[in-house]
Image (cartoon, rainbow, N blue to C red; front, side, top):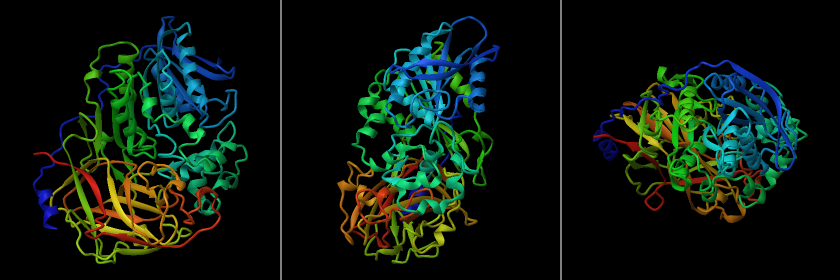
Length: 598
């Protein structure tokens, strides 16, 4: 215990100076806007996509910004944003995705033709008489996917992209999060059945996830879309049945491979939030473009991470915690400055900006950094300890930087039909939710540090090694990083998950049940890469906590535990006896990116 305190006291934790992304002197508002709708752009296979255009009324040729959406190009938010950029000298084209709303063709969210559609739209746009031949792309979530898919096809007229809260490949986040089906993607699938949004009630993606949690527990999961009432989503069954990254379906739409990144020749400005359900896309793309980008500009990506959920930069408070006035930024202004540089060719200094901007929770201030992870990071192991009774927040679990000795394992009974509840209400990550209710259960193991005598700044990706055994032929392991305040509030910062049969280092990110076997009762080593990083100042008097469980529902759909090849097709469940080891031979631990400054 003395060692953990010594580390903390030897460091000072004054924040480095570094402001939020600065829009500076981006193009001013000075143009009236001309609007035209339902242009039909022909794709290479003859399918025509619907495009609405917003541009300055003058006849001067302008650079263009392309947005491709499955959510209707007539959405009020997209219209207002298009007008905002048009008033600043850009032509903005908003296109309906193939098979959605006014566009022709058949809809499948992960049809590989979305890649070539992006290429064809860029080049169609560049040839419009009002366009000067320079095209950028922007948009969030699925609209970020469309940018990366397009960029990997290297259209000649594409000059820059701004992927906002863009997801990674589909086996890393949704519909599969490291092998585990996520509920929000199940609801999203049903909401996107057919050509238009299909709603069933209030809440994200039509309300199913927010109002009918127990329906997600019905087996088999392959019938989820139908149970929600969606009858026009044949691709959903493909998602469930093709549960391997090696399938032609997933390979066709994948973009996060060295070969694909090596084709991207444009600079990228990426943004996400610490509580964004699609968080992994941004840091993965940032790191990969630095390594594999096709041009010097492409190898200088930018990354911004703020105190937001998926609906980024819309509020300064989440889960009852106010992050202060600095939490909101002039994002459109910064994007405009980015496009001023790469579409209009202005030497406005954006090339010299720091490549990484991060908002640190707790101190509630922005800081800039030369890279991600931060170069000054001290990767610090925090070990799990107990006397064998770490069950619930009332147990004897502790967390510190000392290696464990001869300690008994912790045990719990895992019933996938009675999962540990989360308190998310939107289907996405609502923010630093309070985990106290779930931590009262005996099937949650809780390990807490002593109250900190000095503040500890943790910024970066989080990883863990867990030594564990199950009586079942398959199970899930979940670990959560918590900031425990003196008043008892337990703020969830980030979490890691792994499916036991996906533990192989070459395949654990996928639902690759055929690639690993689980010996019931046998101890296996599990490497967890938390799918979200964190930027948090654990203040003096706070505690650092790790929770371990096998469910966190409804965000993650429980593993039935039978060990059959495809979890989505299983029709029965198995109750399991779980063991988590933390002794000298099995030192279960989490690695935190502690940032210290002398």
